Length: 197
Length: 197
Image 1: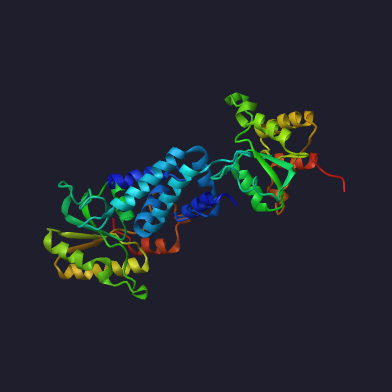
Image 2 (image 1 turned 60 degrees about the vertical axis):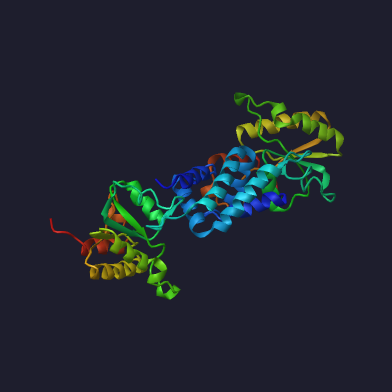
């Protein structure tokens, strides 16, 4: 409809999550009409990030250094290790700002039906790390899905055998959440995990 | 929080319309974790589009050729000229597929308060075009806003003096729209512009 270059750009923009044909069109128009500087900068950042960003050798999160900012930070508590599924989870926890330990990123979860076993989510690397470092507690922060729970259970068994304390982050009603709008599964979990005051 | 390169990429993604900090983060993670091919392709398309896409010499829409696809198409009716505000409007009308004439893109609308006068929206170029081509009817498809209406009125006066028929696209209740959900302004317009059957 438009010139081939613009059509191609709209198509390329659709690789972004949540961007359909209409949004891609709006984005392409906005960039070409009002923000060519931004478009050039974005192109440049994308190329450099694709080339430069790899995995942290220790925790497997995304970074352009051999070790990520958390792993190379001497002041972080390396007796605490939080296990998460994705680098985005690390970011979410870091943004909350209350956790001072280190991380290990599984880059997925156990899912036998998709052929994802322990070796695919770096369990060997995790066990090596537990041997090499003075970790005293593993905090499991995998997602509260069937796969996430199974992964947490698997890691807890392995870590317990290695003599390490294992904990799971609490699941329940979020702060600021109103009971009326909370789903049944969460409410049931909040009741079964209730704490004596 | 993340490495500088990833932070920079998230920042750059925010030049896209409708993309806030959370979406930018999600997009950066998605691209770096699951679609580096897409990211490279997007960077490439952006660079090439910024470099290659300019304005059609005749109608001022976006194109990488001297003349856009519509202007260079011999089979389009060049006695009809549709005047729109933006290249996105051209695309919307082309996608509807019923219009067979040509276009002129104002790239804006009259807005004295912002210092946008007739010379800024290419009225001179439009009048030159009307002189040079066998245009018999101008269809005004500017937006039904105050500025769009003022622009339409201004162009209609100029074109009428040049002896050209001027029409305005119809505004009213959209097809498939339910009266219940239509805003008052549109409804009032639909009543005042009613046609005798």
